[in-house]
Image 1 (cartoon, rainbow, N blue to C red):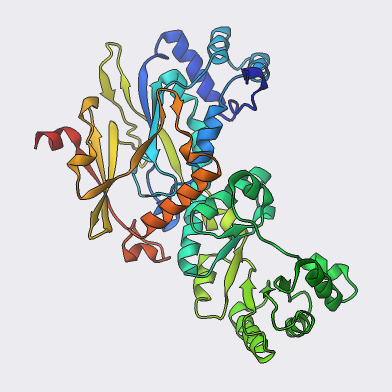
Image 2: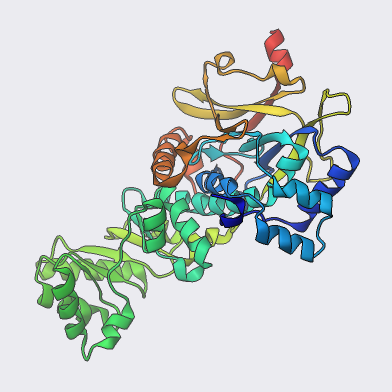
Length: 450
Protein backbone atom coordinates (compact mmCIF):
# COMPACT_ATOMS: atom_id res chain seq x y z
CA UNK A 1 0.00 0.00 0.00
CA UNK A 2 1.40 3.42 -0.89
CA UNK A 3 1.88 6.15 1.70
CA UNK A 4 -0.90 8.17 0.08
CA UNK A 5 -3.49 5.43 0.63
CA UNK A 6 -2.52 4.48 4.18
CA UNK A 7 -4.84 5.28 7.05
CA UNK A 8 -2.07 7.31 8.60
CA UNK A 9 -1.52 7.82 12.34
CA UNK A 10 1.32 10.30 11.77
CA UNK A 11 -0.59 13.37 12.91
CA UNK A 12 -1.54 11.72 16.19
CA UNK A 13 1.27 13.76 17.65
CA UNK A 14 2.02 17.12 19.21
CA UNK A 15 3.30 19.99 17.11
CA UNK A 16 6.49 20.39 19.11
CA UNK A 17 7.63 16.88 18.15
CA UNK A 18 7.87 18.07 14.55
CA UNK A 19 9.35 21.47 15.36
CA UNK A 20 12.09 19.71 17.36
CA UNK A 21 12.63 17.41 14.41
CA UNK A 22 12.95 20.36 12.03
CA UNK A 23 15.47 22.10 14.28
CA UNK A 24 17.47 18.87 14.67
CA UNK A 25 17.63 18.43 10.90
CA UNK A 26 18.88 21.98 10.63
CA UNK A 27 21.64 21.68 13.29
CA UNK A 28 22.78 18.16 12.38
CA UNK A 29 21.67 16.31 15.54
CA UNK A 30 18.71 14.52 13.91
CA UNK A 31 20.86 11.50 12.98
CA UNK A 32 22.26 10.98 16.46
CA UNK A 33 21.38 7.57 17.87
CA UNK A 34 19.17 7.91 20.93
CA UNK A 35 17.41 5.77 23.51
CA UNK A 36 13.99 6.87 24.75
CA UNK A 37 12.31 5.14 27.67
CA UNK A 38 8.62 4.99 28.54
CA UNK A 39 8.00 4.56 32.26
CA UNK A 40 5.92 5.77 35.20
CA UNK A 41 7.51 7.70 38.02
CA UNK A 42 4.80 6.53 40.40
CA UNK A 43 1.57 4.53 40.47
CA UNK A 44 -1.35 6.99 40.41
CA UNK A 45 -4.14 6.68 42.93
CA UNK A 46 -2.11 4.80 45.51
CA UNK A 47 -2.38 1.64 43.43
CA UNK A 48 -0.14 -1.25 44.44
CA UNK A 49 0.73 -2.32 40.90
CA UNK A 50 -0.02 -1.31 37.33
CA UNK A 51 -0.91 -3.43 34.30
CA UNK A 52 0.68 -2.85 30.90
CA UNK A 53 -1.92 -2.69 28.14
CA UNK A 54 -2.09 -1.23 24.65
CA UNK A 55 1.18 -2.62 23.31
CA UNK A 56 -0.41 -4.62 20.52
CA UNK A 57 -2.56 -1.67 19.52
CA UNK A 58 0.45 0.63 19.53
CA UNK A 59 2.52 -1.64 17.31
CA UNK A 60 -0.25 -1.72 14.72
CA UNK A 61 -0.55 2.07 14.86
CA UNK A 62 3.22 2.46 14.50
CA UNK A 63 3.10 0.46 11.27
CA UNK A 64 0.75 3.15 9.98
CA UNK A 65 2.92 6.05 11.15
CA UNK A 66 3.63 7.35 7.66
CA UNK A 67 3.24 10.82 6.20
CA UNK A 68 1.09 10.62 3.09
CA UNK A 69 0.04 13.36 0.71
CA UNK A 70 -2.78 14.62 2.92
CA UNK A 71 -0.60 14.83 6.03
CA UNK A 72 2.23 16.57 4.20
CA UNK A 73 -0.16 19.03 2.57
CA UNK A 74 -1.64 19.93 5.94
CA UNK A 75 1.81 20.50 7.48
CA UNK A 76 2.82 22.66 4.53
CA UNK A 77 -0.38 24.70 4.47
CA UNK A 78 -0.22 25.33 8.21
CA UNK A 79 3.50 26.17 8.03
CA UNK A 80 4.26 23.70 10.81
CA UNK A 81 7.65 22.71 9.35
CA UNK A 82 9.99 23.83 6.60
CA UNK A 83 10.60 22.27 3.19
CA UNK A 84 13.57 20.18 4.33
CA UNK A 85 11.52 18.64 7.14
CA UNK A 86 8.67 17.87 4.75
CA UNK A 87 11.12 16.04 2.50
CA UNK A 88 12.34 14.00 5.47
CA UNK A 89 8.81 13.15 6.59
CA UNK A 90 7.79 12.10 3.09
CA UNK A 91 10.19 9.17 3.40
CA UNK A 92 9.73 8.52 7.13
CA UNK A 93 9.99 4.91 8.23
CA UNK A 94 10.86 3.70 11.71
CA UNK A 95 14.03 1.66 11.26
CA UNK A 96 15.01 1.48 14.92
CA UNK A 97 14.31 -1.09 17.62
CA UNK A 98 11.76 -1.36 20.42
CA UNK A 99 11.87 -3.65 23.44
CA UNK A 100 9.52 -3.66 26.38
CA UNK A 101 7.32 -5.42 28.89
CA UNK A 102 4.89 -7.92 27.44
CA UNK A 103 1.31 -6.74 27.28
CA UNK A 104 -0.53 -7.94 30.37
CA UNK A 105 2.63 -7.68 32.51
CA UNK A 106 2.43 -5.85 35.83
CA UNK A 107 4.73 -2.90 36.40
CA UNK A 108 5.95 -0.64 39.19
CA UNK A 109 7.49 2.85 39.53
CA UNK A 110 10.56 3.09 37.33
CA UNK A 111 9.82 -0.05 35.33
CA UNK A 112 11.27 0.46 31.81
CA UNK A 113 7.96 -0.47 30.19
CA UNK A 114 9.13 0.35 26.68
CA UNK A 115 12.52 1.33 25.26
CA UNK A 116 12.78 2.92 21.81
CA UNK A 117 16.17 3.15 20.10
CA UNK A 118 16.78 4.90 16.81
CA UNK A 119 17.90 8.21 15.47
CA UNK A 120 16.55 11.24 17.30
CA UNK A 121 14.52 12.10 14.23
CA UNK A 122 12.68 8.79 13.99
CA UNK A 123 12.22 8.19 17.72
CA UNK A 124 11.17 11.59 19.04
CA UNK A 125 8.06 11.78 16.86
CA UNK A 126 6.64 8.58 18.42
CA UNK A 127 6.29 10.04 21.91
CA UNK A 128 2.71 11.27 21.79
CA UNK A 129 1.26 8.21 20.08
CA UNK A 130 3.05 5.82 22.44
CA UNK A 131 1.92 7.69 25.53
CA UNK A 132 -1.66 8.24 24.40
CA UNK A 133 -2.14 4.50 23.81
CA UNK A 134 -0.27 3.09 26.79
CA UNK A 135 -1.44 5.69 29.31
CA UNK A 136 -5.09 5.10 28.46
CA UNK A 137 -5.07 1.35 28.06
CA UNK A 138 -2.86 0.70 31.08
CA UNK A 139 -5.11 2.84 33.29
CA UNK A 140 -8.14 0.82 32.19
CA UNK A 141 -6.34 -2.49 32.58
CA UNK A 142 -5.14 -1.58 36.07
CA UNK A 143 -8.68 -0.68 37.14
CA UNK A 144 -9.99 -3.86 35.51
CA UNK A 145 -7.43 -6.01 37.34
CA UNK A 146 -8.51 -4.54 40.67
CA UNK A 147 -12.14 -5.25 39.84
CA UNK A 148 -11.27 -8.78 38.76
CA UNK A 149 -9.45 -9.36 42.06
CA UNK A 150 -12.48 -8.04 43.97
CA UNK A 151 -14.86 -10.25 41.97
CA UNK A 152 -12.91 -13.45 42.59
CA UNK A 153 -14.35 -16.31 40.53
CA UNK A 154 -17.44 -14.36 39.49
CA UNK A 155 -17.27 -13.17 35.86
CA UNK A 156 -17.24 -9.51 34.88
CA UNK A 157 -18.62 -7.89 31.74
CA UNK A 158 -17.50 -4.53 30.36
CA UNK A 159 -20.47 -2.30 29.50
CA UNK A 160 -19.06 1.24 29.40
CA UNK A 161 -19.11 2.19 25.73
CA UNK A 162 -21.70 4.92 26.23
CA UNK A 163 -19.46 6.60 28.79
CA UNK A 164 -16.39 6.93 26.57
CA UNK A 165 -15.32 8.18 23.17
CA UNK A 166 -16.13 5.80 20.35
CA UNK A 167 -12.53 4.62 19.84
CA UNK A 168 -11.51 4.75 23.49
CA UNK A 169 -14.54 2.55 24.22
CA UNK A 170 -13.15 -0.15 21.93
CA UNK A 171 -9.70 0.16 23.47
CA UNK A 172 -11.16 0.00 26.97
CA UNK A 173 -13.03 -3.21 26.21
CA UNK A 174 -9.80 -4.75 24.91
CA UNK A 175 -7.79 -3.66 27.95
CA UNK A 176 -10.42 -4.90 30.38
CA UNK A 177 -10.48 -8.33 28.72
CA UNK A 178 -6.70 -8.60 28.99
CA UNK A 179 -6.89 -7.81 32.72
CA UNK A 180 -9.53 -10.38 33.60
CA UNK A 181 -12.97 -9.35 32.33
CA UNK A 182 -14.87 -12.12 30.57
CA UNK A 183 -16.81 -10.20 27.93
CA UNK A 184 -17.86 -6.82 26.55
CA UNK A 185 -21.06 -5.33 25.19
CA UNK A 186 -19.05 -3.55 22.45
CA UNK A 187 -19.36 -5.34 19.12
CA UNK A 188 -16.44 -3.52 17.50
CA UNK A 189 -14.16 -4.83 20.24
CA UNK A 190 -15.46 -8.30 19.40
CA UNK A 191 -14.89 -7.88 15.69
CA UNK A 192 -11.54 -6.15 15.88
CA UNK A 193 -9.92 -7.89 18.85
CA UNK A 194 -11.83 -11.13 19.38
CA UNK A 195 -13.22 -10.11 22.78
CA UNK A 196 -16.32 -12.22 23.61
CA UNK A 197 -19.51 -10.15 23.45
CA UNK A 198 -22.69 -10.28 25.53
CA UNK A 199 -25.96 -8.41 26.02
CA UNK A 200 -29.71 -8.95 25.77
CA UNK A 201 -32.01 -5.99 26.42
CA UNK A 202 -32.19 -2.60 28.14
CA UNK A 203 -35.02 -0.80 29.92
CA UNK A 204 -36.17 0.61 26.58
CA UNK A 205 -37.21 -2.90 25.57
CA UNK A 206 -39.59 -3.22 28.51
CA UNK A 207 -40.89 0.31 28.08
CA UNK A 208 -41.59 -0.34 24.40
CA UNK A 209 -44.21 -2.98 25.21
CA UNK A 210 -47.65 -2.54 26.70
CA UNK A 211 -46.66 -4.62 29.70
CA UNK A 212 -43.55 -6.10 31.30
CA UNK A 213 -44.95 -9.53 30.62
CA UNK A 214 -45.28 -8.78 26.91
CA UNK A 215 -41.65 -7.64 26.82
CA UNK A 216 -40.42 -10.76 28.62
CA UNK A 217 -42.43 -13.12 26.39
CA UNK A 218 -41.12 -11.45 23.26
CA UNK A 219 -37.50 -11.62 24.47
CA UNK A 220 -37.84 -15.28 25.36
CA UNK A 221 -39.46 -16.03 22.00
CA UNK A 222 -36.46 -14.42 20.32
CA UNK A 223 -33.61 -15.60 22.54
CA UNK A 224 -34.90 -18.61 24.43
CA UNK A 225 -35.49 -19.28 28.13
CA UNK A 226 -31.75 -19.16 28.77
CA UNK A 227 -31.73 -15.39 28.26
CA UNK A 228 -31.28 -12.82 31.04
CA UNK A 229 -34.28 -10.62 31.83
CA UNK A 230 -33.94 -7.11 33.24
CA UNK A 231 -36.37 -7.12 36.17
CA UNK A 232 -36.14 -3.64 37.72
CA UNK A 233 -37.86 -1.40 35.17
CA UNK A 234 -40.86 -1.24 37.50
CA UNK A 235 -41.25 -3.25 40.71
CA UNK A 236 -38.42 -5.77 41.17
CA UNK A 237 -40.41 -8.35 43.10
CA UNK A 238 -43.20 -8.28 40.53
CA UNK A 239 -40.61 -8.40 37.75
CA UNK A 240 -39.02 -11.57 39.12
CA UNK A 241 -42.42 -13.22 39.55
CA UNK A 242 -43.36 -12.34 35.96
CA UNK A 243 -40.01 -13.51 34.62
CA UNK A 244 -40.30 -16.97 36.16
CA UNK A 245 -43.96 -17.31 35.24
CA UNK A 246 -43.17 -16.50 31.60
CA UNK A 247 -39.86 -18.35 31.20
CA UNK A 248 -40.35 -21.16 33.68
CA UNK A 249 -37.83 -22.36 36.23
CA UNK A 250 -35.23 -22.80 33.51
CA UNK A 251 -34.85 -19.02 33.15
CA UNK A 252 -31.18 -18.31 32.53
CA UNK A 253 -30.78 -15.15 34.53
CA UNK A 254 -32.11 -11.87 35.84
CA UNK A 255 -30.32 -8.53 35.87
CA UNK A 256 -30.66 -5.88 38.57
CA UNK A 257 -29.60 -2.32 37.74
CA UNK A 258 -30.80 -0.32 40.76
CA UNK A 259 -31.47 -0.31 44.47
CA UNK A 260 -29.45 -1.32 47.49
CA UNK A 261 -27.75 -4.21 45.76
CA UNK A 262 -26.86 -6.42 48.77
CA UNK A 263 -30.42 -6.24 50.07
CA UNK A 264 -32.05 -6.56 46.66
CA UNK A 265 -29.83 -9.45 45.57
CA UNK A 266 -30.58 -11.42 48.72
CA UNK A 267 -34.31 -10.81 48.28
CA UNK A 268 -34.24 -11.80 44.60
CA UNK A 269 -32.25 -14.96 45.31
CA UNK A 270 -34.73 -16.02 47.98
CA UNK A 271 -37.67 -15.29 45.67
CA UNK A 272 -36.14 -17.22 42.76
CA UNK A 273 -35.49 -20.21 45.01
CA UNK A 274 -39.03 -20.10 46.37
CA UNK A 275 -40.34 -20.10 42.82
CA UNK A 276 -38.20 -23.13 41.93
CA UNK A 277 -35.75 -21.20 39.73
CA UNK A 278 -32.79 -22.32 41.80
CA UNK A 279 -30.37 -22.29 38.87
CA UNK A 280 -31.35 -18.84 37.57
CA UNK A 281 -28.32 -16.56 37.89
CA UNK A 282 -28.26 -13.01 39.16
CA UNK A 283 -26.27 -10.29 37.40
CA UNK A 284 -25.91 -6.84 38.93
CA UNK A 285 -24.85 -3.59 37.27
CA UNK A 286 -25.58 -0.04 38.58
CA UNK A 287 -22.39 2.09 38.78
CA UNK A 288 -20.10 -0.58 40.16
CA UNK A 289 -16.42 -0.10 40.91
CA UNK A 290 -13.89 -2.35 42.65
CA UNK A 291 -14.99 -1.22 46.10
CA UNK A 292 -18.68 -1.86 45.39
CA UNK A 293 -17.81 -5.25 43.93
CA UNK A 294 -15.78 -6.14 47.02
CA UNK A 295 -18.70 -5.12 49.25
CA UNK A 296 -20.91 -7.61 47.39
CA UNK A 297 -18.60 -10.60 47.97
CA UNK A 298 -20.99 -12.19 50.46
CA UNK A 299 -24.12 -11.49 48.41
CA UNK A 300 -25.78 -14.19 46.25
CA UNK A 301 -24.59 -12.66 42.99
CA UNK A 302 -23.28 -14.63 40.02
CA UNK A 303 -21.77 -11.93 37.78
CA UNK A 304 -21.19 -8.21 37.42
CA UNK A 305 -21.53 -5.65 34.64
CA UNK A 306 -19.29 -2.59 34.94
CA UNK A 307 -19.48 0.59 32.88
CA UNK A 308 -18.55 4.14 33.80
CA UNK A 309 -16.02 3.37 36.51
CA UNK A 310 -14.10 0.95 34.34
CA UNK A 311 -13.77 3.06 31.18
CA UNK A 312 -12.65 6.06 33.25
CA UNK A 313 -9.99 4.08 35.11
CA UNK A 314 -12.02 4.04 38.34
CA UNK A 315 -10.88 7.52 39.28
CA UNK A 316 -7.46 7.23 37.63
CA UNK A 317 -8.03 7.88 33.90
CA UNK A 318 -4.34 7.91 32.98
CA UNK A 319 -1.40 5.79 34.04
CA UNK A 320 0.84 8.87 34.22
CA UNK A 321 3.62 7.40 32.08
CA UNK A 322 6.28 9.58 30.46
CA UNK A 323 8.62 9.17 27.47
CA UNK A 324 12.11 10.47 28.18
CA UNK A 325 15.46 10.54 26.45
CA UNK A 326 17.85 8.50 28.66
CA UNK A 327 20.90 8.09 26.42
CA UNK A 328 22.34 9.48 23.20
CA UNK A 329 25.47 9.56 21.13
CA UNK A 330 27.57 12.69 21.34
CA UNK A 331 29.31 14.44 18.46
CA UNK A 332 32.09 11.82 18.50
CA UNK A 333 29.70 8.87 18.43
CA UNK A 334 30.29 7.95 22.08
CA UNK A 335 27.25 7.04 24.18
CA UNK A 336 26.22 9.43 26.95
CA UNK A 337 23.60 8.80 29.63
CA UNK A 338 21.24 11.75 30.07
CA UNK A 339 18.52 12.45 32.60
CA UNK A 340 16.02 15.12 33.53
CA UNK A 341 16.78 16.58 36.99
CA UNK A 342 13.62 18.64 37.61
CA UNK A 343 12.14 18.52 41.12
CA UNK A 344 9.70 15.60 41.45
CA UNK A 345 10.06 14.95 37.72
CA UNK A 346 13.53 13.48 37.50
CA UNK A 347 14.49 10.51 35.37
CA UNK A 348 17.32 7.99 35.56
CA UNK A 349 19.70 7.95 32.63
CA UNK A 350 21.13 4.94 30.85
CA UNK A 351 19.82 1.94 28.99
CA UNK A 352 18.11 -0.57 31.28
CA UNK A 353 17.41 -4.27 31.59
CA UNK A 354 14.58 -5.33 33.88
CA UNK A 355 13.94 -8.48 35.89
CA UNK A 356 11.33 -9.62 38.40
CA UNK A 357 13.07 -11.17 41.39
CA UNK A 358 11.19 -14.12 42.86
CA UNK A 359 11.35 -16.17 46.03
CA UNK A 360 9.41 -19.46 45.98
CA UNK A 361 7.46 -18.15 42.99
CA UNK A 362 6.44 -14.87 44.65
CA UNK A 363 7.72 -11.50 43.45
CA UNK A 364 10.01 -9.71 45.89
CA UNK A 365 11.27 -6.73 43.91
CA UNK A 366 11.70 -5.17 40.49
CA UNK A 367 15.38 -5.34 39.59
CA UNK A 368 16.48 -2.71 37.05
CA UNK A 369 20.04 -2.96 35.78
CA UNK A 370 21.38 0.35 34.44
CA UNK A 371 24.20 0.60 31.93
CA UNK A 372 26.28 3.61 30.92
CA UNK A 373 28.43 1.54 28.58
CA UNK A 374 25.91 0.01 26.22
CA UNK A 375 27.76 -3.24 25.79
CA UNK A 376 27.34 -3.83 29.53
CA UNK A 377 23.61 -4.65 29.75
CA UNK A 378 22.70 -7.42 32.15
CA UNK A 379 21.70 -10.78 30.72
CA UNK A 380 19.11 -13.18 32.08
CA UNK A 381 21.86 -15.65 32.97
CA UNK A 382 23.12 -13.17 35.57
CA UNK A 383 19.81 -13.32 37.41
CA UNK A 384 18.84 -16.99 37.74
CA UNK A 385 16.44 -16.14 40.59
CA UNK A 386 14.55 -13.65 38.44
CA UNK A 387 12.35 -13.50 35.36
CA UNK A 388 13.44 -11.30 32.46
CA UNK A 389 10.71 -8.76 31.70
CA UNK A 390 11.64 -7.28 28.32
CA UNK A 391 11.07 -8.79 24.90
CA UNK A 392 11.75 -7.40 21.39
CA UNK A 393 8.84 -5.86 19.50
CA UNK A 394 10.72 -4.18 16.66
CA UNK A 395 14.26 -5.06 15.55
CA UNK A 396 15.96 -2.71 13.09
CA UNK A 397 12.58 -1.74 11.66
CA UNK A 398 11.27 -5.32 11.48
CA UNK A 399 8.01 -5.64 13.44
CA UNK A 400 7.16 -8.84 15.35
CA UNK A 401 3.43 -9.29 14.73
CA UNK A 402 2.83 -11.81 17.54
CA UNK A 403 1.59 -9.10 19.95
CA UNK A 404 -0.95 -7.75 17.45
CA UNK A 405 -4.51 -8.68 16.57
CA UNK A 406 -6.80 -11.05 18.45
CA UNK A 407 -3.98 -13.58 18.90
CA UNK A 408 -1.95 -10.95 20.71
CA UNK A 409 -4.92 -10.12 22.94
CA UNK A 410 -5.33 -13.74 24.02
CA UNK A 411 -1.60 -14.03 24.66
CA UNK A 412 -1.67 -10.87 26.79
CA UNK A 413 -4.68 -12.14 28.75
CA UNK A 414 -2.94 -15.44 29.51
CA UNK A 415 0.26 -13.65 30.47
CA UNK A 416 -1.57 -11.34 32.85
CA UNK A 417 -3.20 -14.28 34.63
CA UNK A 418 0.24 -15.87 34.99
CA UNK A 419 2.01 -12.80 36.38
CA UNK A 420 -0.81 -11.89 38.74
CA UNK A 421 -0.24 -15.21 40.49
CA UNK A 422 3.34 -14.08 41.22
CA UNK A 423 2.23 -11.03 43.18
CA UNK A 424 2.48 -11.06 46.98
CA UNK A 425 -0.81 -11.20 48.85
CA UNK A 426 -0.52 -7.57 49.98
CA UNK A 427 -0.76 -6.42 46.37
CA UNK A 428 -4.35 -7.71 46.16
CA UNK A 429 -5.70 -5.21 48.71
CA UNK A 430 -7.71 -2.29 47.30
CA UNK A 431 -6.69 0.37 49.83
CA UNK A 432 -4.18 3.08 48.96
CA UNK A 433 -0.64 2.03 49.74
CA UNK A 434 2.94 1.93 48.53
CA UNK A 435 3.77 -0.29 45.55
CA UNK A 436 3.53 -3.99 46.39
CA UNK A 437 7.22 -4.53 45.68
CA UNK A 438 10.13 -2.05 45.56
CA UNK A 439 12.11 -1.13 42.46
CA UNK A 440 15.85 -1.71 42.99
CA UNK A 441 18.45 -0.22 40.63
CA UNK A 442 21.84 -1.87 40.15
CA UNK A 443 24.86 -0.88 38.07
CA UNK A 444 25.36 -3.32 35.20
CA UNK A 445 29.11 -2.68 35.02
CA UNK A 446 29.60 -3.51 38.69
CA UNK A 447 27.51 -6.65 38.31
CA UNK A 448 29.71 -7.88 35.49
CA UNK A 449 32.83 -7.08 37.49
CA UNK A 450 31.65 -9.27 40.34
